[in-house]
Length: 475
Image: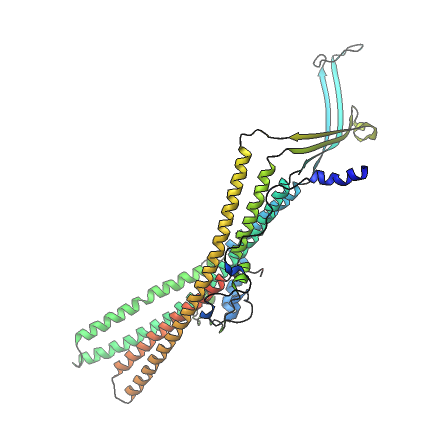
């Protein structure tokens, strides 16, 4: 019987764990089941390989890779997320430590020199004008609140879920950041190429204007045609300024995203370069893997787990709490008593407290916690449905932009061929130079359409990588 009592003592001390046990997130959509496919996967040329986390490396642009690496290392938003991780992990350590006893040491020395009669003490023998009293003590005291109903264990469970949610939020910040850097980089390269084409178009207009002015002087052209072409040239030259301004703004935005001062990348990126090329095939995986991978969904699921644990914390407050305090020390009227084993004294103080009459305060806290859990569950469902919609929409947009690019290239090829024929006919004397220049300008406009379509396709590709949850460094 004695052995049995010692065996059940730990169980009595640790008690039970009240509140609902977390059984995982609820099922939301059919896309969560393994084996399902994206409804609009046929919009793109897919690859059987699993998606690659560092998707930007597949675009083959070293400057883009350098910028994203710099941003992931130095962006303030990532630093904020990492600080929150450290805070959440420290909170978890605190909650785990709260389940253990608290022990402290103390030392006391009291020396009193008081007038006679200042203390109500019995007189013995001859009285003195002064009373001298000394007391020395060294000891330890410990306290422990026994987690009978698991409130502290639920608090630690919730803190662990919060720490994991903070880690997922950092990954989500990395996903958003890598996509935003890539979007701005593609926009920069597109603007630079558009500026080159716009300047070439202005040069062609200047040539046409000079020829038209010569014809006007010979009486072969009207003044109205000269005025019209001058107006077009002025409009074209005025369009250069917004492009230059957008380039400067985009360079500053890239500096901000990488955690640098404005102008930090001007020297490295001001020289025009082609728009990065996306891979010929895109690995997208399946919806179930995407939902497991997306950091925002993981963060929502961990918040749900933390809210569930909070219910148990508040339920435990409705029950009695048991705490034990123990004091052990050495002491006496002489300083040597503080180290004398014979002067040891101990005290054990068990304590039970129970707020059994709180007029519904604890029940209200439990209801608040249940409402928080229901809200977190709804937020999780919203995150899952939003992720599925985001992925399907991104697939559709990517497929549409791909077809749009093919159409623009076909149109550009036709315009370029017409410009070539016009140049040949001019060289043969069949048409005037102005007609050849106009054909070249039309070809430049078609080149501009291809540039814009290429930029839109790149941005659609980047949005797709973001939608399927890629771009965080802990993948």
